[in-house]
Image (cartoon, rainbow, N blue to C red; front, side, top):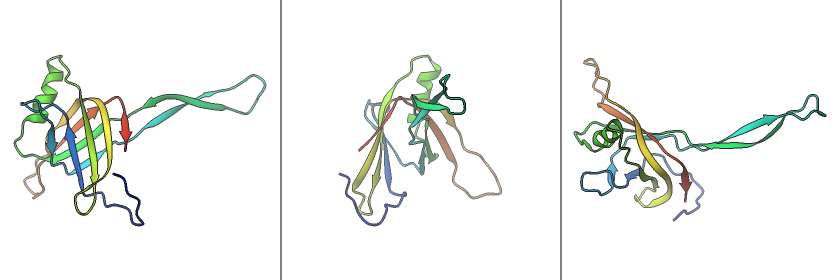
Length: 149
């Protein structure tokens, strides 16, 4: 799927799919305006040995995956609200998902897959009577790993 080319792909063509969270048990596809948090961090552990006075050694520690943040215009779809309601009710519904970068012809270029995600924060829009901006809702997904391919 990944094809190398001289010019980088623009970040405006992408698709978000969250498996199995819609009412019918199918994938939820979102018309999201922004995705962030596709990160992996290996936290270094610092230690010092007794024979080295001024040197700190560093070894790899835990791998951390920050939350993925999705933003979209409010469209009246209750799928994300219903998903976070499962967390409030104490029955977390974990889901796998993917964010796919698309080329100019809307063909897949690269995909980031997250595992065992669940909604940890849903923010409603900010309303301002002096603005004509779209009402945006924000969803944060906690997850247990990202794969890229």
